Image (spheres, rainbow, N blue to C red):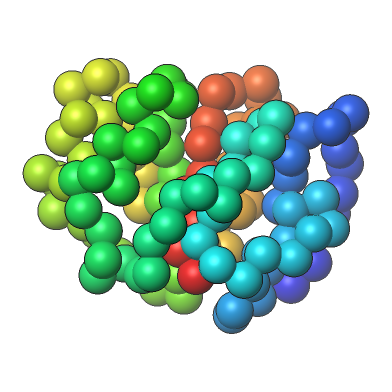
Length: 122
C-alpha cells in the first residue's frame, strides 16, 4: 500500500508498507526500526514480538516521547504491561497496533507536531 506523501522539510514519514517492509521517505526497511520525526534508527534490535523484553522498552525512556506506537506486524498484539512499565512510570503512553495502523497513526501525529516515536517490528 502506498501512502500519500506530504512532507514538510526533512520530517520522517512512512511512505509505504508491505508484509515484509516499511518505507520511510522512500527508503525501504526490512528489519525492526524506530522512527522519530527527525531520524530513523536501526539500533533497536528486536527479532520479533516474542523477543520483546523490558530492556527493549527501556530504550525509549531517553527519547522522551509523548507516545510510543508499537507496530506489532500483520496483527495487533499486546505485550505484558510489566515489559513497558518504565515508560508508563515516566508518563509515556504506549499504543499497540498492527504495523499498517502504526504507520498511519504516526504520520497523523507527526503532522500535528506531536512528539511521537514509532517502533516497528517486522
